[in-house]
Length: 166
Image 1: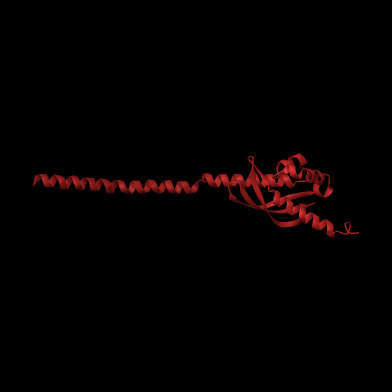
Image 2 (image 1 turned 90 degrees about the horizontal axis):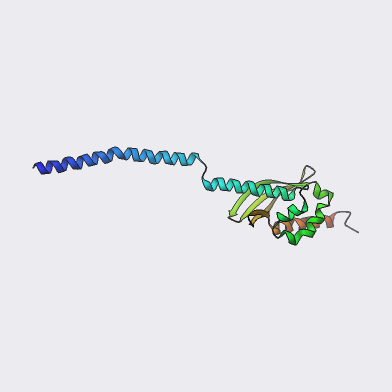
């Protein structure tokens, strides 16, 4: 009988020990969880950093004061558009232009959708434009199709302007 009582007390002591430790383990897990939610996750920090880089590069590319060589470096396949960018750099209108980036949505590790407006002489000329940023050679660049879309808009405006008509 004594052997049965020893087993019973040993089993009960183990159960009590487990029950005593369980709230501490749950509390420890709970404190880790609340700490994790109060600090930014690495992906959130990286995403904010990427958004900042894309915004900076787009604003630099569209800034009229940025040299043509820098703009070429910030454009996907920039060398292909070097003649156009160099010609635009001499334009007084281009010198007065800037971009205001209003949103960046990273869609993959190498692409993002950018919402921006083109501002000329302090006035919004093209509001709410959508474009793509691409990561090329470690640099976030304006995508070639985004630049080409703006060139088409520019050509359409030039052909409809009174000075361009015969």
